Length: 190
Image (cartoon, rainbow, N blue to C red; front, side, top):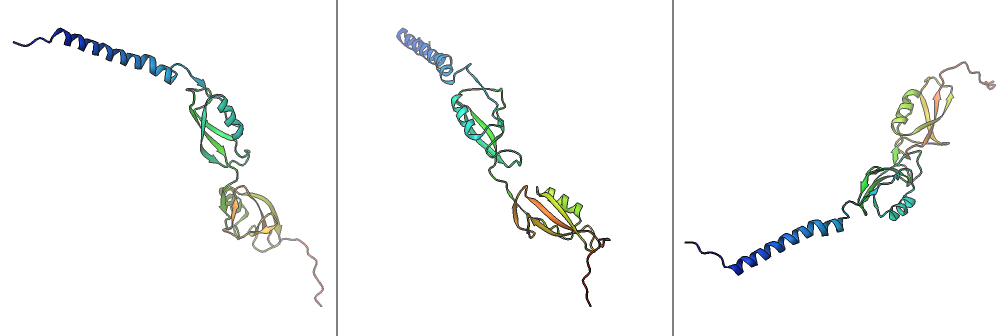
């Protein structure tokens, strides 16, 4: 024959069970919703195009935080301008949420000046484009190697291949015009 638990023990177990259920329900239905602000959200503003400083102040007012996730140089954007963000504008987030932003870099990265000498003008254009450099001025001079690049310059300073330059630099070249019919003044050699 099995022994029956005493009534005081059953009462104690019932009280412990009720307290446990009460604590669990209180935790999930009272404590968690109040600390996680359940049901409350903030709409993510559009930050693209804003300056980093003004964006920081703006997010402080909205109780949001930010973190720079990427820094990219974009030729036509002001430095420290927001390029993109995550979460996207209009998304609903909790207070104090971190917004990840991509920012325009202060200065362009450096690239090596390619060797354009003896290459054709068309090839020089394509090579400069692939290095994110800009072909600015082309000057032609009489020379037997028609359409070949003879010299390369940054501004008015001749530049050697392998020299580091900021991306987007404007490169000037002197190109051979071939043995043209250009008339030149011949000095008296007698």
